[in-house]
Length: 256
Ligand code: 13P
Image (cartoon, rainbow, N blue to C red; front, side, top):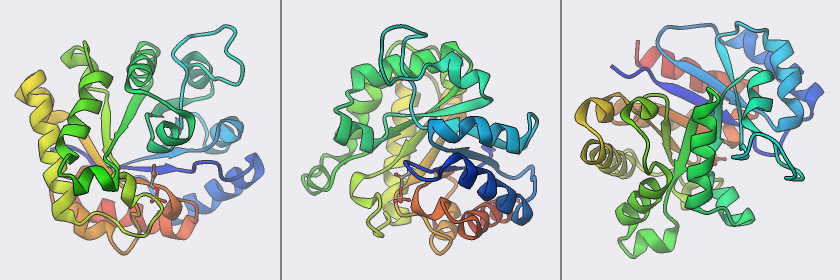
Protein backbone atom coordinates (compact mmCIF):
# COMPACT_ATOMS: atom_id res chain seq x y z
CA UNK A 1 0.00 0.00 0.00
CA UNK A 2 1.10 3.54 -0.66
CA UNK A 3 1.90 5.53 2.44
CA UNK A 4 0.05 8.85 2.59
CA UNK A 5 2.09 12.01 2.22
CA UNK A 6 1.07 15.33 3.75
CA UNK A 7 2.92 18.33 2.32
CA UNK A 8 2.71 21.86 3.67
CA UNK A 9 3.43 24.45 0.99
CA UNK A 10 4.11 27.65 2.89
CA UNK A 11 4.16 29.75 -0.29
CA UNK A 12 5.54 33.26 0.45
CA UNK A 13 4.90 33.09 4.18
CA UNK A 14 7.06 33.10 7.33
CA UNK A 15 10.46 34.59 7.96
CA UNK A 16 13.30 32.37 9.14
CA UNK A 17 12.60 33.09 12.82
CA UNK A 18 8.88 32.46 12.31
CA UNK A 19 9.78 29.17 10.64
CA UNK A 20 11.81 28.07 13.67
CA UNK A 21 8.96 28.96 16.04
CA UNK A 22 6.44 27.14 13.84
CA UNK A 23 8.53 23.96 13.74
CA UNK A 24 9.00 23.91 17.51
CA UNK A 25 5.27 24.32 17.98
CA UNK A 26 4.40 21.70 15.36
CA UNK A 27 6.72 19.16 16.94
CA UNK A 28 4.85 19.48 20.22
CA UNK A 29 1.65 18.48 18.47
CA UNK A 30 2.69 15.62 16.18
CA UNK A 31 4.88 12.57 16.44
CA UNK A 32 6.50 10.23 13.99
CA UNK A 33 4.25 7.55 12.60
CA UNK A 34 4.80 4.73 10.14
CA UNK A 35 1.39 5.61 8.68
CA UNK A 36 2.14 8.92 6.96
CA UNK A 37 5.07 10.93 5.60
CA UNK A 38 5.25 14.65 6.23
CA UNK A 39 7.00 17.43 4.29
CA UNK A 40 7.17 21.14 4.95
CA UNK A 41 8.17 23.47 2.12
CA UNK A 42 9.21 26.88 3.48
CA UNK A 43 10.41 29.75 1.30
CA UNK A 44 14.09 29.52 0.28
CA UNK A 45 15.11 32.06 2.94
CA UNK A 46 13.82 29.87 5.78
CA UNK A 47 15.13 26.51 4.58
CA UNK A 48 18.46 26.62 6.38
CA UNK A 49 16.85 27.65 9.68
CA UNK A 50 14.19 24.98 9.21
CA UNK A 51 16.90 22.36 8.62
CA UNK A 52 18.80 23.41 11.75
CA UNK A 53 15.63 23.45 13.83
CA UNK A 54 14.48 20.06 12.58
CA UNK A 55 17.92 18.44 12.83
CA UNK A 56 19.45 16.19 10.18
CA UNK A 57 17.46 13.04 10.88
CA UNK A 58 14.03 14.50 11.54
CA UNK A 59 11.01 12.51 10.42
CA UNK A 60 9.54 15.81 9.21
CA UNK A 61 11.06 16.20 5.76
CA UNK A 62 12.11 19.41 4.12
CA UNK A 63 11.10 20.52 0.67
CA UNK A 64 11.53 23.60 -1.51
CA UNK A 65 8.82 25.31 -3.52
CA UNK A 66 10.73 25.51 -6.80
CA UNK A 67 14.11 24.76 -8.36
CA UNK A 68 16.03 25.89 -11.40
CA UNK A 69 17.09 23.26 -13.92
CA UNK A 70 20.73 24.35 -14.20
CA UNK A 71 23.23 23.51 -11.47
CA UNK A 72 24.82 26.95 -11.42
CA UNK A 73 25.45 29.98 -13.58
CA UNK A 74 24.11 33.37 -14.60
CA UNK A 75 20.48 32.91 -13.58
CA UNK A 76 19.80 35.85 -11.29
CA UNK A 77 17.31 35.09 -8.56
CA UNK A 78 17.26 31.33 -9.12
CA UNK A 79 18.18 28.45 -6.81
CA UNK A 80 19.57 25.10 -7.97
CA UNK A 81 19.02 21.51 -6.88
CA UNK A 82 22.53 21.04 -5.37
CA UNK A 83 21.97 24.19 -3.29
CA UNK A 84 18.74 22.74 -1.93
CA UNK A 85 20.25 19.34 -1.27
CA UNK A 86 23.00 20.84 0.81
CA UNK A 87 20.38 22.51 3.01
CA UNK A 88 18.70 19.19 3.70
CA UNK A 89 15.86 19.32 1.18
CA UNK A 90 14.59 15.96 0.03
CA UNK A 91 11.56 17.15 -1.92
CA UNK A 92 10.76 20.00 -4.28
CA UNK A 93 7.42 21.28 -5.53
CA UNK A 94 7.54 21.75 -9.29
CA UNK A 95 5.04 23.38 -11.64
CA UNK A 96 2.74 24.86 -9.01
CA UNK A 97 -0.17 26.70 -10.65
CA UNK A 98 0.92 29.97 -9.06
CA UNK A 99 4.24 29.66 -10.87
CA UNK A 100 2.42 28.83 -14.07
CA UNK A 101 -0.01 31.76 -13.70
CA UNK A 102 2.16 34.51 -12.22
CA UNK A 103 5.55 33.62 -13.66
CA UNK A 104 4.66 32.13 -17.02
CA UNK A 105 6.04 28.71 -16.24
CA UNK A 106 5.53 26.19 -19.06
CA UNK A 107 5.49 22.41 -19.14
CA UNK A 108 8.75 22.34 -21.14
CA UNK A 109 10.60 24.07 -18.31
CA UNK A 110 8.77 22.04 -15.70
CA UNK A 111 10.12 18.93 -17.42
CA UNK A 112 13.66 20.30 -17.06
CA UNK A 113 13.05 21.01 -13.39
CA UNK A 114 11.75 17.48 -12.76
CA UNK A 115 14.87 16.08 -14.40
CA UNK A 116 17.21 18.36 -12.47
CA UNK A 117 15.54 17.39 -9.20
CA UNK A 118 15.86 13.68 -9.95
CA UNK A 119 19.48 14.02 -11.02
CA UNK A 120 20.36 15.55 -7.67
CA UNK A 121 18.36 13.25 -5.44
CA UNK A 122 15.37 15.51 -4.80
CA UNK A 123 11.90 13.98 -5.09
CA UNK A 124 9.75 16.18 -7.31
CA UNK A 125 6.17 16.91 -6.32
CA UNK A 126 4.76 17.71 -9.73
CA UNK A 127 1.63 19.88 -9.68
CA UNK A 128 -1.02 19.62 -12.36
CA UNK A 129 -4.57 20.87 -12.58
CA UNK A 130 -7.21 22.58 -14.66
CA UNK A 131 -8.75 26.04 -14.45
CA UNK A 132 -12.45 26.54 -13.85
CA UNK A 133 -13.03 27.40 -17.53
CA UNK A 134 -11.25 24.20 -18.56
CA UNK A 135 -13.35 22.13 -16.15
CA UNK A 136 -16.56 23.73 -17.37
CA UNK A 137 -15.53 22.95 -20.93
CA UNK A 138 -15.08 19.28 -19.93
CA UNK A 139 -11.38 19.50 -20.61
CA UNK A 140 -10.08 18.49 -17.16
CA UNK A 141 -8.70 15.13 -18.18
CA UNK A 142 -7.04 16.34 -21.37
CA UNK A 143 -5.47 19.37 -19.66
CA UNK A 144 -4.02 17.25 -16.86
CA UNK A 145 -2.85 14.55 -19.26
CA UNK A 146 -1.16 17.11 -21.52
CA UNK A 147 0.66 18.61 -18.54
CA UNK A 148 1.86 15.16 -17.48
CA UNK A 149 2.86 14.13 -20.99
CA UNK A 150 5.32 16.98 -21.36
CA UNK A 151 6.52 17.16 -17.76
CA UNK A 152 7.28 13.45 -17.46
CA UNK A 153 8.41 12.82 -21.04
CA UNK A 154 11.31 10.42 -21.39
CA UNK A 155 11.53 9.42 -17.72
CA UNK A 156 12.26 5.80 -16.86
CA UNK A 157 10.00 3.82 -14.55
CA UNK A 158 12.69 3.95 -11.88
CA UNK A 159 12.66 7.76 -12.06
CA UNK A 160 8.90 7.78 -11.53
CA UNK A 161 9.38 5.78 -8.36
CA UNK A 162 10.52 8.98 -6.61
CA UNK A 163 8.04 11.34 -8.27
CA UNK A 164 4.84 12.43 -6.53
CA UNK A 165 2.01 13.95 -8.53
CA UNK A 166 -0.20 16.59 -6.94
CA UNK A 167 -3.58 17.20 -8.52
CA UNK A 168 -4.42 20.80 -7.69
CA UNK A 169 -7.43 22.18 -9.55
CA UNK A 170 -6.73 25.89 -9.97
CA UNK A 171 -10.31 26.79 -8.98
CA UNK A 172 -9.87 25.06 -5.62
CA UNK A 173 -6.63 26.78 -4.59
CA UNK A 174 -7.12 29.40 -1.91
CA UNK A 175 -10.83 29.64 -2.61
CA UNK A 176 -12.28 27.59 0.22
CA UNK A 177 -13.95 25.49 -2.45
CA UNK A 178 -12.21 22.12 -2.33
CA UNK A 179 -12.92 19.49 -4.94
CA UNK A 180 -15.29 16.81 -3.75
CA UNK A 181 -13.80 13.42 -3.08
CA UNK A 182 -15.57 12.16 -6.18
CA UNK A 183 -14.12 14.91 -8.39
CA UNK A 184 -10.62 14.30 -7.07
CA UNK A 185 -10.89 10.53 -7.35
CA UNK A 186 -11.99 10.75 -10.99
CA UNK A 187 -8.92 12.78 -11.91
CA UNK A 188 -6.58 10.69 -9.75
CA UNK A 189 -7.79 7.56 -11.53
CA UNK A 190 -7.17 9.12 -14.94
CA UNK A 191 -3.66 10.14 -13.84
CA UNK A 192 -2.93 6.59 -12.67
CA UNK A 193 -4.24 5.23 -15.95
CA UNK A 194 -2.01 7.64 -17.84
CA UNK A 195 1.02 6.34 -15.90
CA UNK A 196 -0.01 2.74 -16.50
CA UNK A 197 -0.41 3.33 -20.22
CA UNK A 198 2.83 5.26 -20.56
CA UNK A 199 4.93 3.05 -18.28
CA UNK A 200 3.55 -0.04 -16.56
CA UNK A 201 1.02 -1.12 -13.95
CA UNK A 202 3.60 -1.57 -11.19
CA UNK A 203 4.80 2.01 -11.62
CA UNK A 204 1.21 3.23 -11.74
CA UNK A 205 0.21 1.46 -8.57
CA UNK A 206 3.30 2.68 -6.69
CA UNK A 207 3.15 6.39 -7.55
CA UNK A 208 1.65 8.72 -4.97
CA UNK A 209 -1.02 11.12 -6.17
CA UNK A 210 -1.91 13.92 -3.75
CA UNK A 211 -4.87 16.24 -3.78
CA UNK A 212 -4.38 19.98 -3.19
CA UNK A 213 -6.80 22.91 -3.05
CA UNK A 214 -8.49 24.27 0.11
CA UNK A 215 -7.62 21.21 2.20
CA UNK A 216 -8.50 21.78 5.86
CA UNK A 217 -8.81 19.73 9.05
CA UNK A 218 -12.54 19.59 8.25
CA UNK A 219 -12.30 18.04 4.78
CA UNK A 220 -9.15 15.90 4.92
CA UNK A 221 -10.98 12.84 6.25
CA UNK A 222 -13.51 12.43 3.41
CA UNK A 223 -10.70 12.94 0.90
CA UNK A 224 -8.55 10.22 2.45
CA UNK A 225 -11.47 7.81 2.60
CA UNK A 226 -10.62 6.94 -0.96
CA UNK A 227 -7.46 4.91 -1.49
CA UNK A 228 -7.07 6.76 -4.81
CA UNK A 229 -5.98 9.82 -2.82
CA UNK A 230 -2.54 9.36 -1.29
CA UNK A 231 -2.39 12.51 0.78
CA UNK A 232 -2.60 16.25 0.45
CA UNK A 233 -0.68 19.31 -0.65
CA UNK A 234 -1.85 21.90 1.84
CA UNK A 235 -1.54 25.68 1.49
CA UNK A 236 -3.41 28.01 3.85
CA UNK A 237 -4.15 25.39 6.50
CA UNK A 238 -0.47 24.43 6.83
CA UNK A 239 0.54 27.85 8.15
CA UNK A 240 -1.06 27.34 11.52
CA UNK A 241 0.63 24.64 13.65
CA UNK A 242 -2.68 23.57 15.14
CA UNK A 243 -4.50 23.02 11.85
CA UNK A 244 -1.49 21.43 10.12
CA UNK A 245 -0.95 19.11 13.08
CA UNK A 246 -4.62 18.13 12.99
CA UNK A 247 -4.37 17.27 9.29
CA UNK A 248 -1.23 15.18 9.93
CA UNK A 249 -2.77 13.40 12.91
CA UNK A 250 -5.96 12.63 10.99
CA UNK A 251 -3.96 11.21 8.07
CA UNK A 252 -1.89 9.06 10.42
CA UNK A 253 -4.95 7.65 12.15
CA UNK A 254 -7.00 7.16 9.02
CA UNK A 255 -4.41 5.03 7.28
CA UNK A 256 -3.21 3.17 10.37
P1 13P B 1 -4.73 26.18 -0.35
O1 13P B 1 -4.69 24.98 0.54
O2 13P B 1 -4.49 27.47 0.36
O3 13P B 1 -5.94 26.18 -1.22
O4 13P B 1 -3.48 26.04 -1.34
C1 13P B 1 -3.30 24.84 -2.02
C2 13P B 1 -1.98 24.89 -2.69
O5 13P B 1 -1.79 25.61 -3.63
C3 13P B 1 -0.92 24.03 -2.14
O6 13P B 1 0.17 23.97 -3.00
